[in-house]
Length: 325
Image 1 (cartoon, rainbow, N blue to C red):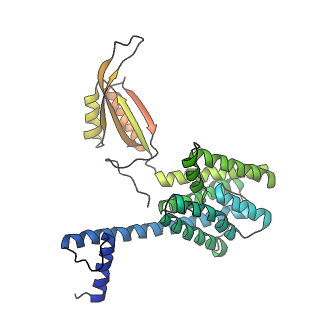
Image 2: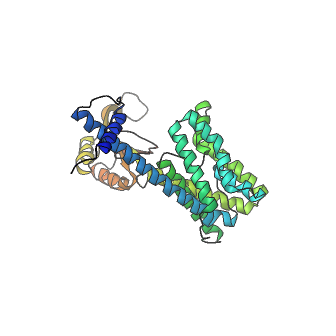
Image 3: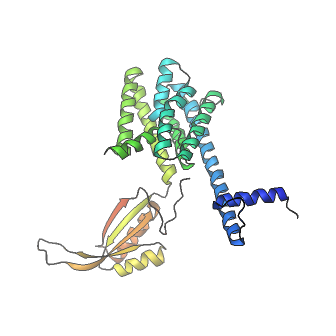
């Protein structure tokens, strides 16, 4: 089947752009194959990013119009401020979402990157249009259901959008900026920020709505964590045992996981001369594998010293992790 020359020329030019080559460069077969692979990967990333952001916007719009807005509930962050101002002034929620997020997106342009800011501007603008024009049915007026499921769908929207490489709430951009300038952590800032929002809500609306809105925020934040980390939240496990060779065999051969072995010493008691050489085993597993690992270790050595810690982020190694686009 003959290929249209114009289409072929366009594809070659796109491959050259993917490789960073000039238009008049003649590509070898290897360079063409490498460029075609990069182009395919870029197109795949753009497609998956668009799908994530689109689903995130639809989910967030459903959480807002199907649950929160009809029942005068708010959430944390910029979205919560927008809902609060809309409730007290009647000002357009769609415009508030854009206007209040704009300073954070400008900050993100400088602190993170331009692509992130452009994608976020588009995502927030589309969310504003969805809130303004897309009809959603009101799901329920039960306050507990509104708090839990409104937070769930809004959190799912935020999480999916982040997986697509954008945000629909600029609070975290400000938190990252302040974390770089001051000692306040991102989590601490977001917590303080939302405490202020819910305190103002209790004064302007009612304590009851503020409490239910706090539940909405907790539901949303937990959903965001679940979407970003998935069911496979990772746990770092450190194991110290006299039967370390058998445990290494268990982790490598039976469970098929990677591990790192440190050379160390172990000891106990008040005197400092009763140390013995010992290998220290470290591995990273999902929370679904914790029970199996600890059970198998207990069979080998009931006295093994095991330390577990949550892993917030990691790169490389043998553990598979879904990348954020």
